[in-house]
Length: 99
Image (spheres, rainbow, N blue to C red):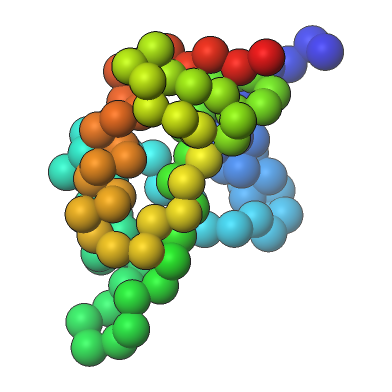
């Protein structure tokens, strides 16, 4: 493999060539993750939508991996705002160990 890019970069590249991909955003802080969940994917007065929060690593098996801080899994379904903040806080700045 000659090109290693994170998922969000590959999606931006595909979108720039009019290839449709799922909507996604990058968060750098737990607060930003919660804000993205509430403002980009959900609208006031409507039922909350579930989203997926993913660690961006250059490795396979991130869903089954474990972070060095003990947090399990690099892919999680978020069903409420505090989960977006909680999962992001457990993932950001941590090393994910995969097989």
